[in-house]
Structure formats: C-alpha cells, structure tokens
Image 1: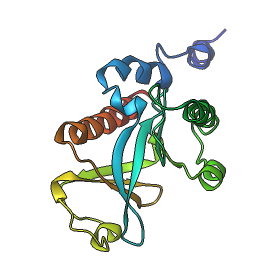
Image 2 (image 1 turned 180 degrees about the vertical axis):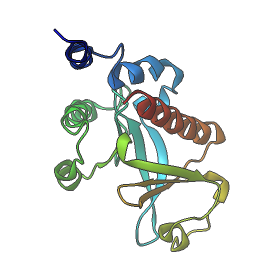
Image 3 (image 1 turned 30 degrees about the vertical axis):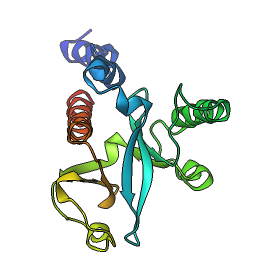
Length: 179
C-alpha cells in the first residue's frame, strides 16, 4: 500500500479523543444548578411587554429553553408530569429548531450552535427599546441567535445574571472548540 493511501485511510478511520457532547458534559459541574432546575426571568416580548418566564438549560447543554412554568421537585404532581413531558421534548429538539414544540407547547427553544452573541448591560434591541416598563439596564441580557433574532430578558439577582452569562459563554466556547 502506498504512503498516501495509508495516510488517507488513517485520517478516515481515526476518531477524535472527545466529541462535542463529551466536552459539554465535562463542564456541567461548573454551571449553576439553578440553570438546570429553572431560573425565573422576565422576558421582554416583541410588543414591549414584560412577562415572567423560566430559563432552563437542557441536560446535554445543547439547548436553552424559555417556558411558562417552573418544573422541579417542589412542584405539584401535575407539574412533575409536565416536567417529564418537558424533558422528553427537550430530547426531541436536542439539536433542531424545535418550531413544532415552540408552537404547540409555547416553549422557546434556542440551540447553542445558533447563538451568535450575548450582550448585557444596555438596551441593544428593538424589543428593549419598545419596552413599556422602566428597565434596569444592569439586569438586561440579550441573546442574538438565528440570523439576529433576539431573546431579551431580565434577571433580578446579580448572581443569577452572572451565572447565565458565564454559562452561555462557557458552553459556546467549549462547543466551538470541540466541534
């Protein structure tokens, strides 16, 4: 077998030491547990109204969910059943756009691969400009994704705000470094 063929064969059959999923799994312990259980936020809608929502990271860290209800152990039985359903949907839309889930169950799904950048601390989108409430710009986070669509929300606690920003930054860095 000639040398070029051996090199080509070696390149094709060699698998990397780690995959994106394994790399993301390795950083999971560094992220705030609140982000997996559901963090209360205030979402700014396209018409400028502010509504309470819950931000949750998927277990595999590929997806960010924004939904109406907090899911977890301290909730009622019906909420726990919804939580199991929610996690099932999380697996289905793991790395797709999830438009069916978003429309049917009103869960906003953002794939980590689609996040272009995140900004915080100022009004930088039309939704925030149209906001009918007085905004504390220090609590604002805007996630730009899918061709500059934005998900704008407020996080009340400074610690939680920093947890969200650090988590998204870390996840994106690891994702892009290992893909």
